[in-house]
Length: 90
Image 1 (spheres, one colour):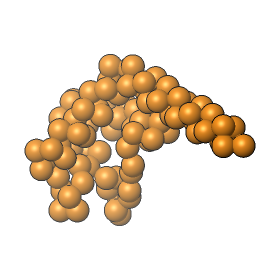
Image 2: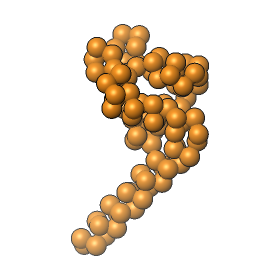
Image 3: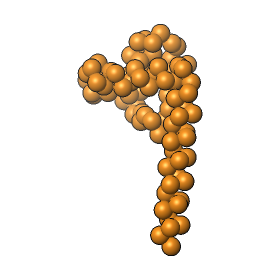
Image 4: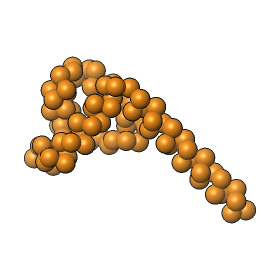
């Protein structure tokens, strides 16, 4: 039985990796993901130590509706997590 469980885990890992690559294959999504990563690395964060969607959108000069779509795709692929604080999405 361990072989079936191991195969299921591998299949799940492959699905997760495939979803991540698919999400990052879009040039704008890759730029959004990289900007979020760089904001965290360079401590360009808000008071909650998180990069806000507005800051990321302004850093790469795209509209909030466009970045919202791309972040949703990154979130669905398991690459980012979002949290709402009032009207701000982190």
